[in-house]
Image (cartoon, rainbow, N blue to C red):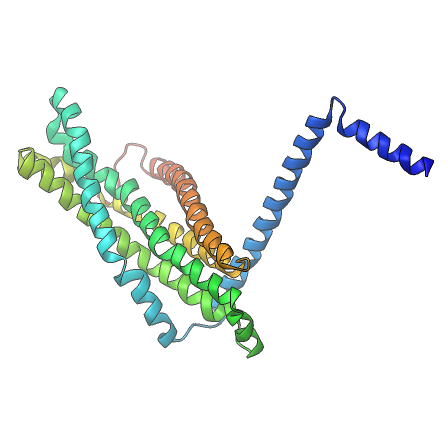
Amino acid sequence: MSTDSNISSTLSDRSSGPFAGLADWVADWGAVTIEGISAAGKIALFSWQTLSWLLFRRPRKSTLLPIFYQVGVLSLPVVALTGTFIGMVLAVQTFFHFRELRMETELGAVINMSLARELGPVLAATMLAGRVGSAMAAELGTMRVTEQIDALSSMGANPIQYLVVPRFLAFVLLIPALTVMAIFMGVVGGYFYSVVILGIDKHHYLYNTQEFVDSFDLFTGMFKSVFFGIAIALVSCYQGFNCRAGAEGVGKAATSAFVHSFVLILGLDLLLGITLDSFYYMLWPEGASLFQ
């Protein structure tokens, strides 16, 4: 009894000593680090299984078409509307500053390059993550909670091949088309507000756009969108597959799918932007592109 009491008193002294706060801080960060490494390993295995099934067995057409319709067709209105307003907002925010510099005719180059390289793909991916990604995570989470995924496994079907691969293909194949729609509607919205409402000369607006925006800018946005689609699909499906029990777990899965997808979109946008710019100036140091 005396030994146990001595041990407990020693532990209590350590927990209340001068280094108690430091020990708690180290323990908290250690737990976060272990949890992060474990989650990274799980999503890496999940991604590997998805890609493996994608390479060795194609999903059925009857499974693909409804998901393609949900991801692509139903997302067109919100992506087009968002792109239109973003083009107008860019025109509003940049016109007065450019007019002070007597460069208002350069608006076409600034608006359209921003839409093609950054805002178009990022906004299309964000809308897709918010409209489809979170709903997909909630749908798969509900299937996990109601044991429908376990029922698929018991019947001999692989849940990843049946549920994840079609959704992965839908995101990867359709997000470039949605990005083109966002860019196109943003260009239309910026042109309408700049030329029709602000009265900028149409000829100089289009001429500066043609001079400063080339096909490589559009290629940059399209290239980024593929990686955005991969990130949204894998994160949303992973969150749904690993949903906790109950309605609260389904809600958290949907929220986590959007938040993590959005953070990944921004991180990938930065990394891909740096990589593509370095690649561009490595091939064309003078800034002249073969795509032009």
